[in-house]
Image: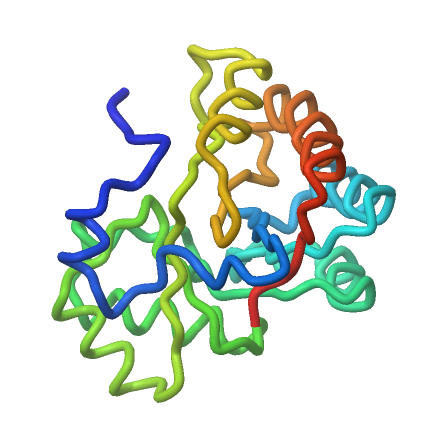
Length: 207
């Protein structure tokens, strides 16, 4: 499995209309969580974020919001942000633009947010243009640090190292609230939160 845990500048330059990192002001980092809500992982994350006085951003799959509306509501009530991650975790590179936009709009019935993150980070320039025309004000949120908690060939400690060695003020960091990522995420997240606290990072939600 090939992926980059630190997003290279050339990719950011190619997709300038997407948001890859944010202001480093106030020593702020942005922890994000993809693929939920999940009945086990999401409540665990909420508990950990509360423990460390941190806010996060949850990019939710529409069908999972339909299946777990109470957990989705808990995310909002705790003061975190949510974003659209399509209704069925659709890969933009393998989907026609019309069907891709349709899937995002289906998720919008359940997720009220200007934030959107393409599953796998895969979206074409034309899909970006169409999405922004169809839903004015959309902010496409990518990332500059991957924990790689989805990778079943590494362990939780590797995920910790991926984040703490590559994160800097302004970084957008990706974790997952999913069954696949659970073993690594549940190990790595508390340790990353502890590291952020010791570094004096402000952990904020994206709006």
